[in-house]
Image (tube, rainbow over all chains, first blue to last red; front, side, top):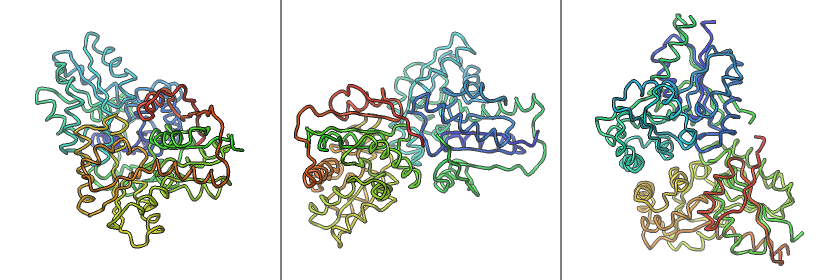
Length: 266
Length: 266
């Protein structure tokens, strides 16, 4: 049971920041990662469509006998986590709850900002999650649709990226928030730019690390942590595994030996 | 037979520039438009996946008895036009041939630049099409992956868009090309920015208009032009038809009464 892998999925590359955090924190764990590159991005698609894609992936991963499922995509976490929990009996960790909890612990002013894709922000999932933990908190939510394509283009610290961030974050800065949740798994690579734009007094909350800790806590509690060496990571993509491998190396900071192609039905 | 509609499809909104040009040139024609918003964008996906999506759409449109099929998407034109022609007996117009022909007629230096998505440029389809028409032409091809998300964000004439264009087009400007093919149906709305960046001596070739003329020529030759008033346009999207209708109004310059939801199998 302990040897069974951790399943992680995302619409594409972004969730690799979660894979990286999980592997760093839990180096003995076997992991299966699925990137839905045939349907990427999820952020601008409807709840119904994103839910259908997510269920299909969860089915594929649970068929490979995972012990825990991590939804490493904010849009899928926002719109599909509840349905996935209903359909599958294993523990399901989304990226929204851990990030919201950390933000509530961090804020001093009680004003928390969150940035993400259109789908994530429109869902109101972060606002709901924060209010569940800290009732009186003020949440400022702002969609930033160009950040994902900028990250995928590799323009992580360009003048254009900084100007885009300034345009998106102008109101957020004026709001007096002291904590900014990076509500999209693509965003951690933009930290240098976001720190510059927001100024030193605002703390950035990276949900990748808090999600990894949530996974560890659950596995620990259920006595499911693997304690042997030689852990394996298998990576699947639903389209163009070669391109995925190439771009993944940038995020992981090391090359991926092999990315398997796995098409989905829907 | 003449009353049968013209079928047009694209991965999403971009092809509406072709719909607009067709409706302006041929106001008596019934048109069915399909935007594959469940799978948008095509530009970063593999040939195999884009071909599967395109065949599915062509099947849907031919089942609705169209008299001609227009592939109003450069990526699908580049990778799937030949396969579609093999599978369906009606005339198929892609957006690459008409734009290439117009560029060959326009250039004086014999140097033609083309910009598009990663998929379109990687396919080499424009280079092949230009060389078929004008053997000795020099083709400078440059992928511009951020243009589509910038257009979809509505930032058609912002400073950020201009900076992005300068970054992408720097080598193209130095190449001495006097003609620039807009090899993506999203790009015509960027004409003011692109004209500023390229300077007045470079002619922009918009494939929407040349494609509309190609459609007219084929229908005229086959005696299939409809000559009655009260033409109808029906618009389908594979996801989130409300969002599609909202954004479509910007491109068409007028509201769309109704967008129908039509899911695809693949």
